Image 1 (cartoon, rainbow, N blue to C red):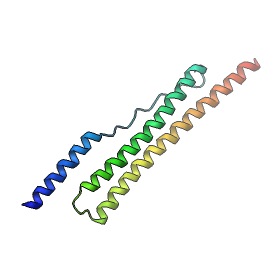
Image 2 (tube, rainbow, N blue to C red):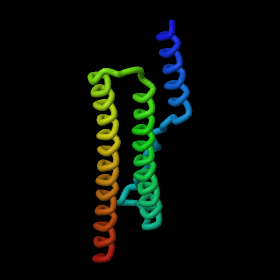
Image 3 (cartoon, helix red, strand yellow):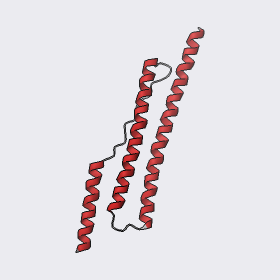
Image 4 (cartoon, rainbow, N blue to C red):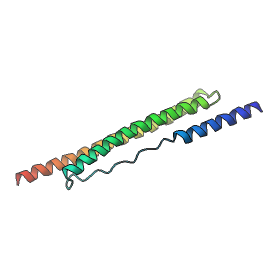
Amino acid sequence: MTKLIRISAALLLLLSTSFALACDYPERPAIPDGNTATKDELLAAKGAIQEFMAAVDGYLQCIENEEQSAIAALDNPSPEEIQRRDEMLNKKFDAANDEKALLGEQFNQQIRLYNAKLKEDASE
């Protein structure tokens, strides 16, 4: 019976921690079309992208803290369980960092288009 109470208490702690820390992935900002965007629109997008990058870093810190709390709440987790949880956390980190890199590259492509348009307009 004592083991059941400990498991129930650990589950309650885990669930309350999850609700308290609820890590929400930030919303991805829109990237304006470099062929039609103004300088001000691109600068605003740059700011939104920088905020997104910082918010993703905050999200990653949050899920790491949440996972550490969840593992601490487990009663004698096996090495396999810890490894499985670590692999899942690494996949989340990799996906978030891939998204940051992709967003940065997509924005840079639009900047290149914008600069090419400026150069073309100047030569006319």
